[in-house]
Image 1 (cartoon, rainbow, N blue to C red):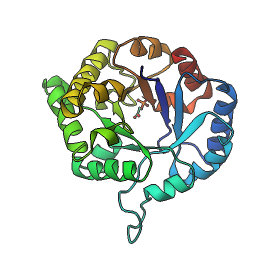
Image 2 (image 1 turned 60 degrees about the vertical axis):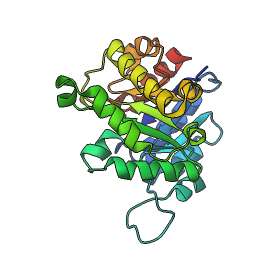
Image 3 (image 1 turned 180 degrees about the vertical axis):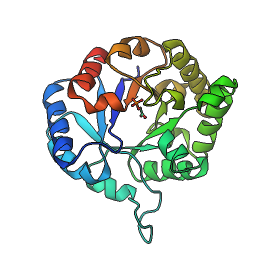
Image 4 (image 1 turned 30 degrees about the horizontal axis):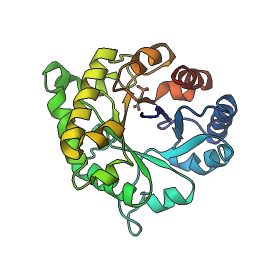
Length: 251
Ligand code: PGA
C-alpha cells in the first residue's frame, strides 16, 4: 500500500510574515492527520522560519530546488547538506518552471536526484509534457524520456527515496486540469516504465503525484485513480482552507 503524499509548492510567493502564518495555520488545521504524508515547500529565504512554525507538526519541509555539489564556488546555489541542516526532508527537482523558464536539462536534474538521495533528501522528481507534445501525440515519449534520463545511475534501492510528480505543463497554473483518465494513463505508463527499470516491487512502492491545477474540487476524482498516489499543489497550496480541504479529502 502506498501512503498518499500531498506537497504544497509555494513557488515564489508569500513574504516573511505570511509564510509563517500559512505554515502555522496548516499545522493547526491538520493536527492529528496521520494517513497522509504532507509537506510544504516555501521559498528558500523562508525555509528556516517555516521550519520553526512546523516544528511540532506532522507537516514536513521541502525545498523547491537544490544544487548537486556539496559546497564551494557556486554563487546563488544551495546544497543538500544545507537543506538537511535546516530541517528539509524533501526537495523538488525538475519542476517544469525550472526546466522551461530556467533551462534545466535532464542531465542536470539527474545530478540533483543523485545528490539528493546520497545527501539524505527525498526527491520529488517532476516530469511532464508541454501542450505541443500532448497535441502531437508524443506525451508518453517525452515523459518516459524525462524519467529515463532523470534516473540514470539511480539504483533500485535508491529509487525507494523518490516520489515522481507527473505535472502536464499545460495544466500548471492554468486552471486546466488533466482529466482523471488523462492523469491515470500517464501515471500507469510511468509505473510500467519503473517496473521495466527497477522491477515490479519497486514500481508498486514508488509514489506518483499528480500536479497541475489540483484543487479541492478535483481532489477526490484524481485520487480515485489507481496510480495517482498524491498531489503536488501550487496555487491551492497558498490557501489554508484549500490545502487543508484537499488533505482531508485524501485522508
Ligand atoms: P498549480 O501548480 O497547482 O498552481 O497548477 C502545480 C505545480 O506547479 O507544482
